[in-house]
Length: 292
Image 1 (cartoon, rainbow, N blue to C red):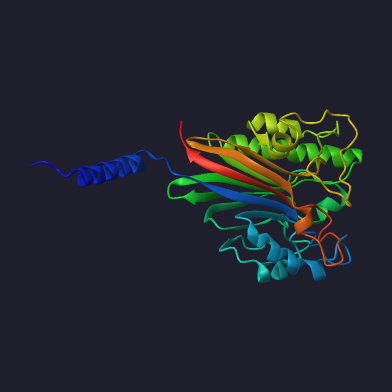
Image 2: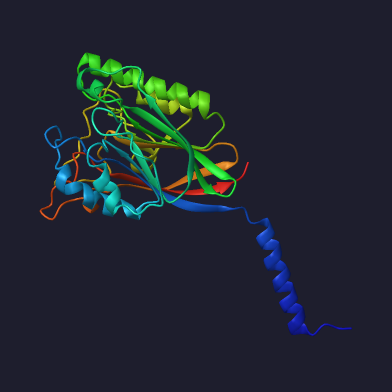
């Protein structure tokens, strides 16, 4: 029996669609944001958390994965306006909590909070450190996500403590995320231009790409010892270096491709055009796929 021409074409089209579906690898996209929300008690904060935390919670809803630092005494305000379905529980305000939390559109598992082994002066008032979790992008597809807040300051003791912090998280990633795709984002308090900082150690040892370096610098970080590339608050661009960083790498069969990087300053300002925090919100977008 001869199959009519139209029917044969329809069958061929259906077969090609089935074949294409069978061959297509799973994949997707996601956006991330890291933001130090300046949630210290009002008398300690250099921001205005009493009035600014709820607006921050509203505005982070536009990102799939959000890491926040200094989420201390105004945590309830932040979560009251945030709508992400998966959120880490607070570890407490000052002086009990680390201030590190994650809000995500993806489920997570195996949350761990790790305290720094070294700190200096006021950085010792809270158990600062980093968090680890496994983030599920799709069925059977996950990445390791780290959030950190390193020691601040530029005194010699501060610099030494911060170098120890960076070395500590680097060693942890080597031990616990071997062969895994990883995203690290948070307040590193480091600059590539500051010769005493060791952010390059973390990048090199972990096989990471820095989203800012890749997108805004053409893959070349500024030289250690060069003048700091400080942001001009009246005209913030992606060219300035901030201490809040996003690092990423492939791992296993999960491939991460950076599709964008942005200092989101313009979206996180008050009605009278001041910053909602004393840090800039830093965002990136990724495409993920599976393949060897």
